[in-house]
Length: 230
Image 1 (cartoon, one colour):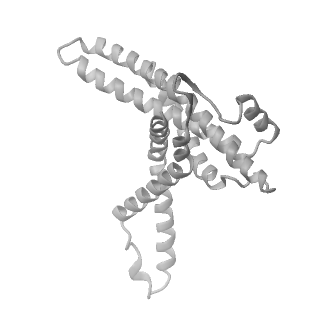
Image 2: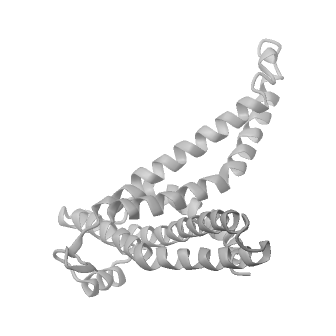
Image 3: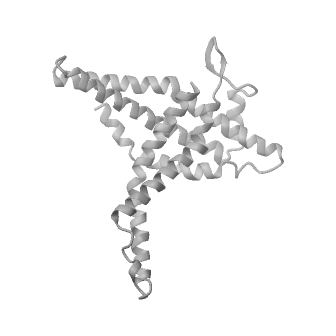
């Protein structure tokens, strides 16, 4: 289960990083154009103008997006490996020392940025990961079913329905666990800071700052999810 949660959220992060590739490339292009304008002002540096071409800018943008994705994986996704079951005979998530009611009460009483942002971005990444799984199921089944099994129209309907079912199963079995694990991790980090008599507000700042734009980018593309059920 911990590996499943890690993989699900990581797939969502990867989908988000794919969406910002073009934005990063546009930023790199803008910075390159600005640098070329500055360098062109002096004869000694004019030779450096256009030294970085389209290929180099694309590579830089991809490296930046990759580094961004890996940083979010390390700060936000990796804690999913800390998931634990209450009992091997009881398929339910449990905190060893805390109850859900205590946890949510503490969020309501002290809504620190990490307690608010981590469950939110994790929920968005979970949705993106589940959608990616559904699309994989749909495309795979569509190709398999129309190979002399059923007509293309029937194959499309069956594949789409089973894709939706796969997404719902992933969300039901892994999605809520991933979100609540993120809340547990955020709460534990904030409480550890409180025990040191320090403010919990700066806790997890880098992870929140890096993950929130990716989550927002994925939300802005959420209308694509409707294509699966139309």
